Length: 594
Image: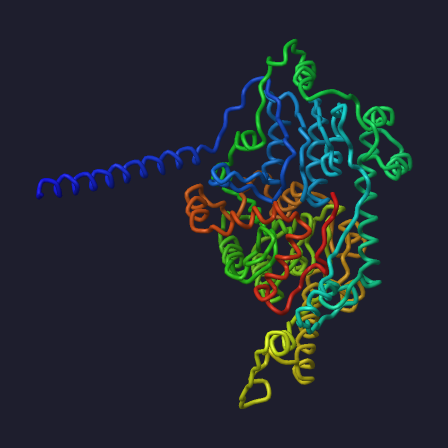
């Protein structure tokens, strides 16, 4: 019996030891794979720009993506732009192949920045070939740059114009017995409309109509120029229902250059490279080409231009980000990071890359304070992405210089508060009755089981008004304008970057590279190393985070199942109690059909 127990114990110990050794080896192997940050570029290479899935400001590894079978691909705008730049400057890369897939979720400004990089690449004399079974508007906008646009014989081009949809759920709340008490400043501050209206207000419809028309004109003008079609002619074709036209019609109208099957494309690429066989060239992915060069920590000059990415909803902390659609700007972390950059003598200037529809007014104020701190020590330039609106503009307005894409959505200088009252739901529908004993008038302030008193409503509106005064003062001081001038273009109204330039909310139309060059000039440095912040999570950190966070997988699947429109709708309702009651964010929840 003793021998039996001894052998069993030895076996158990052996299994544990072997398991630990295997685990250690696996972790070391994974870390070794993850730490490989540079890639060798083969000769006669073609960069494959696969337009599939969605795009975010910065790439992030997904350690469990393949294991869990997520069908949603995510690529970083930073990787795409770097890969195209490396392809332009590397003699081993001969051209770019755009593979158009089910690509969506990119803002017009993100698409515009990629397109600008492709146009710049073409000027190097290298080729671009595009192929698609079906071209979405976003993929066709990018593919139209190509020397040769190829489509499947049974393919389609879904070029039809912009549509913008906002969902209203007042009736749902009425049925539930929930009323939203609304407090806001700004005629155009329409983020609260879904809570008490069933359709768009005239003001909201006006602003969406204006900026949608401005954006579409920009996109359609770019395509018309690339395809050498008159703008009016392309606009007429758009109204003919291009989505359901035959491919020969696309060919006849010069929207494509060739109709072919996908297996014919390799020979076309070989022909572009003066090769006889399809297999006589190599391909390289966006991720690999982006990783083919890496910056030294400080460079020989010791001068660093820091590019700090601030993308997503503005919240106070990661713990308050429940229900946010993707990336977040957590003020507790961002303020610490910005302070570190302000105190780092090697950092000669900071470029704040903002892609945010706004969020918490309190969190925006904290980030604004650190922008001012940097400004007191070194230049800080803002580069606006798809959105820099409301809270996104709040954290931008103090910068020395602001650069925006023509199709950036910015402005939305306004503030609002939403407070749910569930008295009918709790008392009449569920049958629960609450009784309160209090010592002072405002002791139970915020109790959602009863209607608000007039004193509470007046106090809240005064608080919102005070927040608006502070917001407009921050903007006026930052833009060196009078507060009355800011109020005249505020009222929560959203502007395109092109329009914002005319009214003084931004200083220049351009992209991230333009902002970096301005930062160099303002810092008076000719040579500098460009470093991106905050540091991306290591492979091991992400592995541990994914292992401890099962919600991320469920969230990804929910997004795939519901689609962006209904996903955003439900997540917005889910997150009402997490976003805080007072917000400065873009005045709508909607989706561009791109």
